[in-house]
Image 1 (cartoon, rainbow, N blue to C red):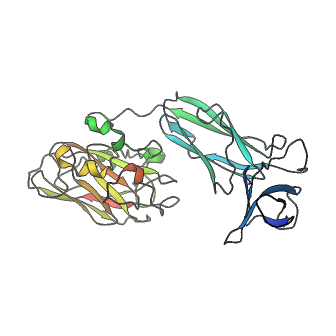
Image 2: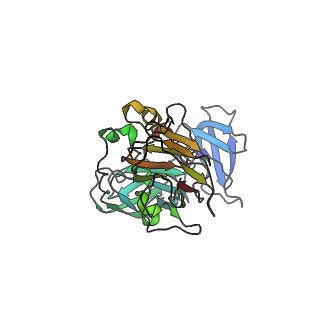
Image 3: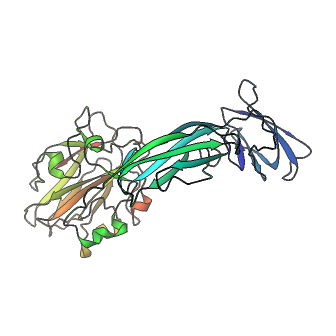
Amino acid sequence: MFSSRTAVATTALLFFISLTGAASASEPKTLILQDPDGEELIDPITMTGIVTVRADGSIVVTTDQPLACDSGGGCEGAEAQLQSFTSSRTTAEAGQSIDFNWTSRGAWDCRAGGTLPGWGGRTGLPPNSANATTAQKRVNTVDLEPGSYTATLRCENGPNVQSPPLSVPITITEPPPPEVGLPEFCAGADRRPPSDWVRLNTNSESCHWSGSNWVNGSDCRHWDQVFASPFDPTGTGQTIYMGPRIASARSYIALRFNSGQFAPTARGEFIINTAPNMQSTRKVISISECPGDFNETAILDTDNGGTGCIISTVLDPLRWGGVNGGRACRLEPDTQYFFNIIFTDQRPGDGLTWDDIEPHPDCPGNRCGNLFRNR
């Protein structure tokens, strides 16, 4: 649980520090680590550094020398444990990011291995410590060939005290074919979601909620496959429940639809309401010619292809009108659009972009979602 530069007392450990002389940065200190039952975890270590007592009672020792056990002794009986090693996904489309998380005890360094490019060959990964409440590294799979890979990790307390390694299998698949018929401006990096966000689609990544369970067969990339019929500008669509179905909540919905034929004076709205057994939270909704587009400045630029349709809402509707409707949300007839939804507490108002967006804090680990309907 200790980095090569910092040791931290937590609720699981009790620290007793005896100082030889005054507590200065240059004088040696002896650090004795005990568990709650008084058993020493490792032999006393003499170091030089600065001792800080935090407001919550935890003690931080910032050393100016390495803390690793070596062949010179001083750490007899020391043990490094890698307690867990997991990944955010074991199957990823090429281009999606994978987050690796681990917890360790008594380790001052962790080292990566395996065959997954971008992960294998890393050295000096931090254990979970003062520098990282949960140790984590992100690997991007852009340009990786589809196939099977392995990510391994071991943690150590010097080269002579190492944990057994743990491994995670990773399968990389082909990315889905790109959307066809998109305007050229959709290719800009400022209009596309980051690779570590998931566009909800089918099966375990479907966004469709029945009121009691997820509907895996609905493809959340297409309006007609979720609503069971094409978009109807007259507003006779059925009610659908949708939400972010990813444990980390780093997901978004982009439903493709054609606006159909409507008069320039036509009016409509996407209503939002609570859904059974789902938590209603704030979300950003946009209508754009680009999937997953939440670039506020570009969407509001109606002179250059923007629809003017982006709002932050809990239950307020998103209203739209025809090309001469005088509403902020102006749709052209017979045009391909995407109904984009992301559950987040961030709001438009100062040039919102993907760089500003994080999942709503209530959604990771919970079932967030709402009723949606066009009328």
